[in-house]
Structures are given as structure tokens and as C-alpha cells.
Image (cartoon, rainbow, N blue to C red; front, top):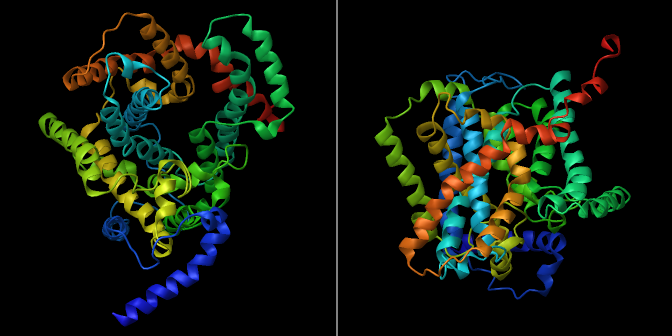
Length: 458
């Protein structure tokens, strides 16, 4: 016990200067007793150990699953129905989750009418979905980023990811967003002025966190991770995420600085990047419909009841930023020096907690064959960038209607279920060929191919 106490004191003394250097605001925060380690940390340590053991076991099975040797990955999936189904379902969850978040944050006013008194229920549903929706999207992003860098892949990265991001944040959003949420043509001249002003002040430009994170992830793959063995790349990305969580400088939202989310969700991207998606799809048989339904219910119970009952409120780090950001920041500052020093274990533990339902959802619940909705998986960028405008118009319509006040939990559940087809409708509309035709010039800029052709082909 004395040796353990000495090791604990050494750990605190070694990490405390680092914490105060990377998080100067710690100096102004009340510090708890240095030797305190909360039950949340111990429980996260258990889940982190399970995750590490699972990663080691998966690595030993790598050759059996047909993974590539050496420093590059074999892209064993190009156009997969399961992958496209996963994409559109993840985007549906995003749309539904943002509908709930608008009510939790007070942007929407449904909690004053048919969701009256349901704020706690909405927040619980929102938090439960957060355990799956972002890890699912980031995991898929890693899967589609597999493969050695090539001139064609670098061209597509620049043409269909970087260029659309630039056109959206510098042209489409400042010029047209106010018109989209008001349908007032008089806003267009103002939008043009805003666009010109923003082009002259690039340091104020912001970009949706997932789009910026995806650019950072893909660029880091081409520059660094693709040059390493998959196992080394995976450990490296997870390590970067755990260490970067201690830096407050990554929470800014402007160009080049909004890296908090990119590093926060990097472990899920890393898992997808090294995951033999195609081989696992072949090896894991799709369960029968009743079994898939039972697994789906189990995933919901895990996210809605089991995980919240195991941890105190805001105990798990938020991937949207560093450890001191968002709703978990206040909890982080109240921890002891030792607990903060071990906070990176919570990120590892949360990864295991999130990955279990994510993988079960992909390989045992979602359809693997073509469905009428599969095509939407190729066009989720449109729905991701524009669905908040549809939510705005939904708010305008519902606030204009004489919706009665309901306080019954049964009615609240019914209202949420009623918004499932609404969110599917939003996804269908924004990924339709008619809507894509309006913004194809910005989000699918085929016209830019002329700038990437080899001189001999021009």
C-alpha cells in the first residue's frame, strides 16, 4: 500500500505541471483532495481494459481476416450496400438527434406544448443517441478512408471534400442561408455583402465540426498514418486523442484551430480505418429478423438505461472537444489532480462503451442488401449541411398551429415516434435528385475536374 501511495504521489507530481501548462484555467479552479480517484474512473478503467483486450485479440486475428501486411491497408470494400445503409441510417440519427437537441437547448418550443414537462426525457434520449450516432459516422468515415494514397484519391479528396467545404462556408452559407430560412429575396443583397466581408476575414470563417474533422482525418491519413503499419497507426491515433484532450487550444472553432472534435472522435475513425469491414461482413452472418430486433432493443436499453445508471452525470468525456469543454468541463475541473491525470482513461473507456453498440448495430441490425433508401448513403453531405434549415421551418409551422399542451409521458413518446417519419422525410428530400440539382455545383463539383487533369489530357 505504501508503494502504491508513493506511485500515486509521483504520478500527481509529474502530471500536475503538464495540466497547469495546457489548461491554465485550472489554476483558478478549486482543486479536490489530490488522492481521490472516483468510481467513474475505476469503472472506465475496467471498460478501457476490456477495449484493449479486444483490440489485442482482434490484432491476433488480423491475418485470418485477410488484412494486409506491411504499411498499407487493403481496401476490401468499395461500394457496399451495408456501408451505404449505415451512412443513411447514421444521417437519420443525426437529423433526429438535432431535432431533440433543439428542444433541449430551447431553440424549438415543443416543450411548451405537446412535449411539456418532457425536458428530462428528451435530454435522456438525446444523450442515449449520442452514444451511437457520432461514433457510427466516424467509424464509417474511417472505413471509407482505407487504402494507400494515390493520385486519384488525393484528387477526389481535394475535389469532393475540401472544395465543397470551402464553397459551402464561403459562398453558399453566407449568401443563401438567410434566404433559405426566410424565403425573403431581400436578404440576398445582404447575403452577398456578408459573403464578400467573410472572404476578406478568413480568420472568422467557421466550418461544421464533422466536415472539418473529416478533412483533418483524411489529410493525416495521406501524410502520416498510411505510411505506418495499421496496428501502429491505430495506437498512434488513439494516443493522440488521449493526449490532445488536455489542450484547451483545440476548442476554437475557426480555421486551423477547431481540432477539439477532430481529436475527440479520432479513436472511432481509427477503428474504422483499420477495420476489415468487407471480411467481417462475410464472416458474420446476418441474424434473423426477430434476433436483429432483440439486439436493437438491447442497444437502446444499453444507451438509455444501463450506461446512465453506471456513471454519474457528465462523467464520460464529450468527443466534441477537449476534456474541459462542453457539459463535462465543469465535472473535469472538480476532479482531483490524480483523477484529472487519469482522465484519458475515461476516453478509452468511453470508446469501448460506444463501440460495442455501434458494431452490433452495423453487423447484426442494419440491412446488407439494396433497399429503396440505400442510394441516400452516397449523398449524406447534402442532408448533413441543410437539415437544420428544415428543422427551422418545422418550428415555424408548429408554432403557428394551435397544438395543445400535453404532460403525459405516453404522449411524449408518441410525439417522438411521430417525428421518425418526419426525419426520414427530411433525409429523403435533401438527398433527392431535385434538391441535389440546386447545390450540385458546390457539393459535387464535377466541373472542377478540369483543374485536376494531367497536362497531357487537357
